[in-house]
Amino acid sequence: MGREHLLDLSKLAPPEPLQQAVSALDALADGEYLRLLLNRDPIYLYPILVLQGFEHEKRAGTQSIFELLIWHKGDEKARQAALANHGSA
Image 1 (cartoon, rainbow, N blue to C red):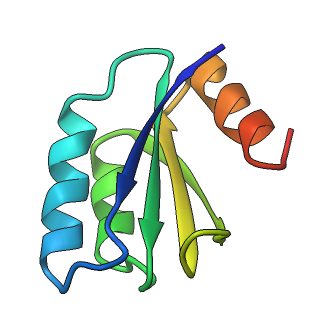
Image 2 (cartoon, one colour; image 1 turned 90 degrees about the vertical axis):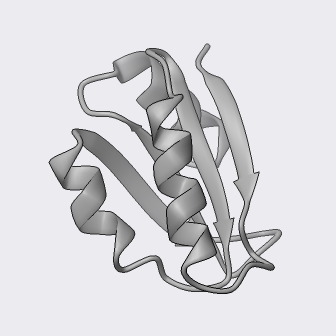
Image 3 (cartoon, rainbow, N blue to C red; image 1 turned 120 degrees about the vertical axis):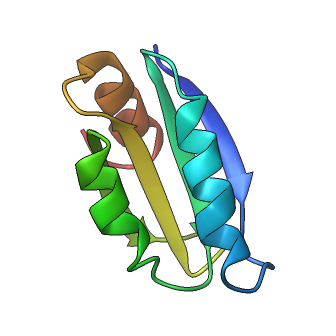
């Protein structure tokens, strides 16, 4: 099963959430996914994810307003783990 990296950005003011999220992407290995807890829709992060080869799923959060699950494009192990661990398959 893929490994989760949790990053709670819900209490930070812009631009810190974007900066920390982008930094966390650099450390994401195969089979791992990132779960961001956010209180704002990270609209500036989406184009960065596409350009850097990531896929994502946004959903309503349980610990914050939004949760964003992120994994490397084509990393089926990470995708399945992220969706299975957080209510989708």
